[in-house]
Length: 155
Image (tube, rainbow, N blue to C red):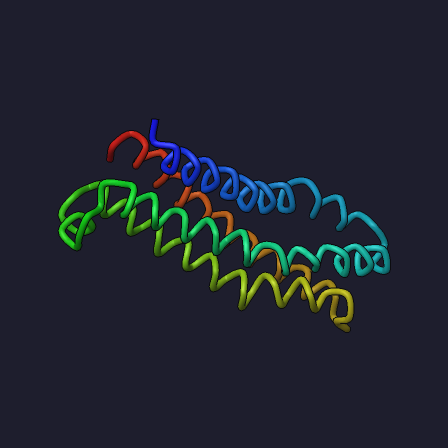
């Protein structure tokens, strides 16, 4: 067994589950429950949840770097022809670009909106904006997840 490949794959999957799982649980479980609370309690909880803004850039970076290593140095892609000349390479590139898009939405849209919720004067509008941004993120995560399955199947 190639222990380096095992470790990279294991960490990549674990951190990906952590990142995607957080997004899913916030969107479908925690967020709706919070929105049923009085606004002051919502503000307090969102101020505490803003701490995830420090964790997920690290998690996302690790997922991206490990996925790059997994696909190239420890995987099937050994050059530009491997990216554009194979179904696997194209799927890998779509996953890579979509993960980069998740970074952009997280850094420029979701993170700043979550951090503004505790102090915004227009809480309802800001919370609705966060929900729209989170929906975009879930679609992007769905694309990445689908690509991971396709690559595992050899596509």
